[in-house]
Length: 291
Image (cartoon, rainbow, N blue to C red; front, side):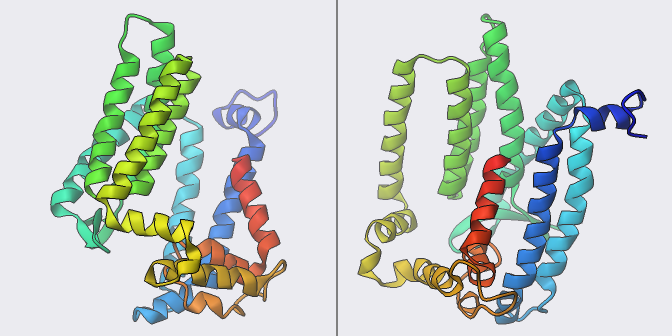
């Protein structure tokens, strides 16, 4: 089936796929399931759910992700662009619909509900925009008469505006970083890059002025010794890192994870440090960096 002389689609896929990248992605998926076992039961019990609730969901979505990932890797370039374009259109529309029909969580509308299940459209917009943005910037380099670079910028602005209205500063920064990297690779002038860098600083200042929760996070990061509610999450995350040390306390043995907010989600990294140690976390960082 995988012999080099065979010309089957599976054989051709196997001999052309980046096997190191594939292995790293699968390892990261398995690490996510393992960390769900370690970090999510206390969170589930705290909000009145079964200890297995988040574990089952993590395993279920990881199992679904594998065939989707493998299927996407087999797509020809042209088909991949069309799939990404369809995703981008659908989920940008859903992104804007969250402003009207979204589920509000902690003062932000980032999720939309369908048949009892919630979806965060921005998570699907990001990879779709990366593919379509790369395609448009590549076209702008090959065909100077096509305003593909301007089109990519327009798509980016539609996405960013929707994210800011939710508001979601983190996802906004990721989309802008993707666009900026593609713009840089497309051979833009250094004067434009410097101007855009200055604009990014201005946007950060505007976000600090307009969004109180963003300002609180920046203040807490710059002056953690001040304490108060703004540093609660960071303090608990640091306590988990200190508790775990280099090698961790072992699976299920960490105490700090029981008081870390969102230990199964945003702060799963610090929960992992308490359970498995800083060395394990450094391996995860290396794995993500390799990907």
